[in-house]
Length: 397
Ligand code: ATP
Ligand code: MG
Image (cartoon, rainbow, N blue to C red; front, side, top):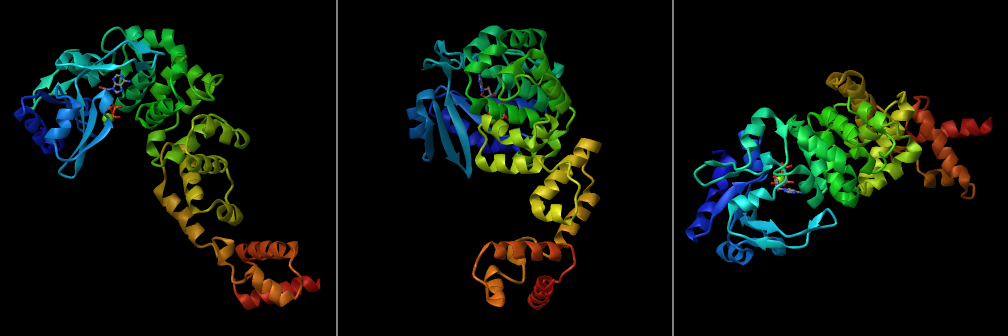
């Protein structure tokens, strides 16, 4: 058993000591069987939420009505969820209620994909009622039960299917693909926030190219923000190795660049995905500079972070790899700039007012801009005296 499971094992033992069933479930079980790094270890039990709260000293109620309690244990936090069956679904996105149940099998049956519907007991034995292990072997994404029915219950599952396709480098089973083609329009019922979470994971997956191809082929793109008429572009964007980017803003910058979304539309496009303001600002800035010719002024105006991001994306677009040596040179060139912002100038607006003995006005900003350019271009040393003399000589002309 993996270390992360061993660390969480006392939780299963504690639940069992109180005569409840307890299993590891979900992504961690899947990832173990794929020899992938395990993320969060989730636990399922037939103990009702109140029991979970009374058994463990430190808990957080994050959705008791749905059966989910967070248990804090040994410096980690674990989602412990009561076995549940979902009642009738409303609006293609949420059950009208949940019913706590005693059967692990029924709990696993409501999960989205066969590979996500396995459990592991305290002895490390795999419980696999729906062929998850076989599908891992076949690298296949398939829903638990009839795909059309499952997508009618919760339409987000279609996008999740493609997200896992990208992350795990799997293919869609014929029946699951067919059901996505036929039911893609149901995604319209899903909130943008939920779609964005899945789409971002899709972009960052190793096989984003294949998944974006599926987004295009299944027609799912027509229900994604700002992509409705961009099938061809989506296929082109599939050629970019987004997984090589770490920052969220960079992933979106590369995406809008690959989608040929210009500076004018970038903000609205990113806003339609309901991204945080900071990500929108950074992504738009970087995207606008990817094709930039870099001289001192352009580097200065971009700032170090935007400069490095834009250069890295450009390299990935051209060569599928970041040339670290070249990137280090770019960083060095930036570091060598005599000033990084107006604040670094050896004179301030106040100094200019004093020296020129003129009433304040637009001329102060104009002079500062001239000084800034001259310093950046290497025509003028960033020293108070030199700048004052230079201004004098300029103003005599
Ligand atoms: P990740 O490593 O990205 O966290 P994960 O498999 O843990 O992958 P989560 O989104 O964290 O995915 O969901 C945890 C588990 O809950 C899934 O493995 C699946 O069993 C179940 N699940 C999540 N979302 C749905 C859904 N929309 N419909 C049915 N089951 C779902
Ligand atoms: Mg998870």
